[in-house]
Every structure is written in C-alpha cells, then in structure tokens.
Image (cartoon, rainbow over all chains, first blue to last red; front, side, top):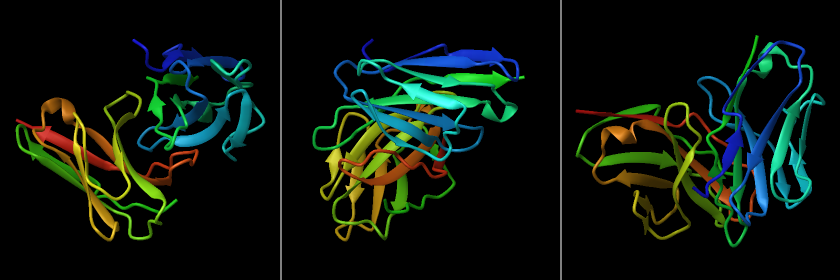
Length: 114
Length: 110
C-alpha cells in the first residue's frame, strides 16, 4: 500500500505526558499537512510543510505542539504536557502540488488523554 | 476560500443514485470544488474535484452549475459502504489548508 501511513493508530496517555506521532506521506509528495478532529466536528487545520519548510501554523497549534519534517519526507507531531482537551484524532495528509493541491489523508492517530 | 452550505443529513436506498447538493454562492473564478468523505473513525477520503466542467471518475460524478454557485455530487449506485459524512470544500488550486464544514451525513439503507 503506497498511501499515507500514520503511527501509532491509537495512543492513550496520562495528563502531563509527552506524545509523538509520525506520518509517512505518499512517496514524492512535497506537501504534508496535520489536522485535528474532535468528536462530531470536521477536521481542523494545524500546520503544513512544503518539503522541509513549515509554511503555515494555525492558532490552534499552541506552544505545546511542535511539528517537524526534517528531511522533507516523514513528519512528526509532538505534544508536550498533554491535557485532556488534546484528546482527538490527529490526521496527516500529503499532496503533490502540480496544478491543484489534492490532499490524501492517512488513517489518523486517535489520542486519548486520561 | 468560499463558504459552502450542505444539508446536514440525507437518506438513500441501496442501489439508487445518491445526489448530494452543495451551495457555494460566493465562489471565485479560481476556486475549485472538492469533495471528500469520511467513513466513521477513518481519515477523509478524496472523491473528486472540478472547476467549471462536470467531472466523472470511478467513484462519482460532479455536476457544477453554469454560474458555479452550486454543485451536486452523484454516487450512481449507492451501497451500504457509501454511508459516510460528505464534505464539499471550495479552495483555490494552490491553496494550502482544507476548511471542513459540518458536511452531509449520508445514510444508505436496505
């Protein structure tokens, strides 16, 4: 399967712990996006990269959140000092900007903060 | 990006065509209409997109009105596996973030 992959698929953590999620985009896609989705809502944009550069960050991305894409391939999203309000599905998408920017999503990582 | 409006829910009998409407009256000339769907607890799935002309792929057809103020996603023969939330999104070709609304919850029934 050559789609977007995310790891882990599920994460349960205690409040105050740090967590890190990984996203592997479709090969050769130059853009990578992170979204967050809470129960009953549509996904909300967090940030995106074009190659290694982080080009936009949402106001939702507090200073406890950090994302990296060091070599322009996979990306990590870290949440420090997790809070119960961080419980959500974290979605990754990738695209190849070539005319249009069609994004393809991974299966998501479901985070539960106890 | 232009705001889109969709009905909150629709029902469709299995085997029949599902026609999902979307209003985007403030869409600008360089904004595409994208459709995604999300089956429960999965990541959104890209379905189709278009600018002016009607589009068809193996999943669906997209009909855009001549004035581009509305569009309809057509699933020609709905199955139970098409039960999902369908999102209509307008954005420019090289735009970055997708802005999801509340979508239409399509329930396909026997």
